[in-house]
Image (cartoon, rainbow, N blue to C red):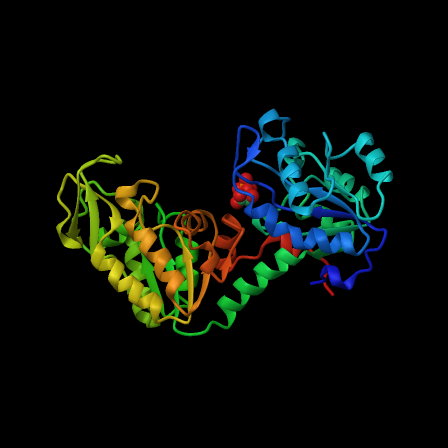
Length: 391
Ligand code: 3PG
């Protein structure tokens, strides 16, 4: 694929798709990680003398204007980070936008309004893609977090302009791609989260790659039940029991060490004030529920992490939003911080966890993609990447 470096960008209007889909409260950005992650590309474009037209989605406004999902606050934050004016527009296509762009000087930055206010965005509508393309000379995609979406501003537009990757997109593909294609070994994946349903693809694909697979979180109880143990009131997906068995079988065939929790922190109810205790995984009381991996499991998992050369983590080990059930996730985060292996955080909740437990700066790579890094780890093609121009 072509990258920014393959093009002369001086004086060019660049439509740069970023992922500024960030958490906000009361009109202010509460986590600017994704905005900071886009800064290197934006700075590069400025240095090259491009006219930078930024585009992003925010939330899921379903094709309609929504006052609470306007992008201006992200522009304010970006301006602070760059020490430079960022002009936020009220629309993303149309005459007013064209007029603003025609007045741009080299190095200027415009932030278009939320592209998902257009009904055509998520439909990857051809007319909308053409309208975006008409605003610019070059398309730069730096929105790794949205690269799994085939939308007008992530994929469609690439048919009508030279379309290249930005630095963040390149880095994400490079790190995740190398990890999966030429991993240092032992290679360990840690998969957690609430549901098996959301992790089927990633578990299946990783079983072809890893040496160790550590399972935690709500989804582990389906595996534990599949092995014939009682799990009380813990989360379970009855329709995934056979699948869980088949994964354990596949692990055996592939020689992958498949780790399930050996103990759990259980609670009398789903509440931060519930009575709790740690029990052997085969002894979950019938009216209790497992909400975290237990201390013995933590020891085993920390040891595997310590002895791995490459570790990828996706999904929390328990309900870490509640202090009573944070220990598993916190301990895994700490083990990740301490290992000498290369550590990759695959987006979403695990990224939030390493932030929360103050070890984010100890990780080698924290992906800015949630769904996107998951789909990448499932071995799927990302439409936002496939659409880019080949060399
Ligand atoms: C994300 O936050 O994962 C991306 O920005 C994509 O958002 P979406 O799931 O609404 O498409």
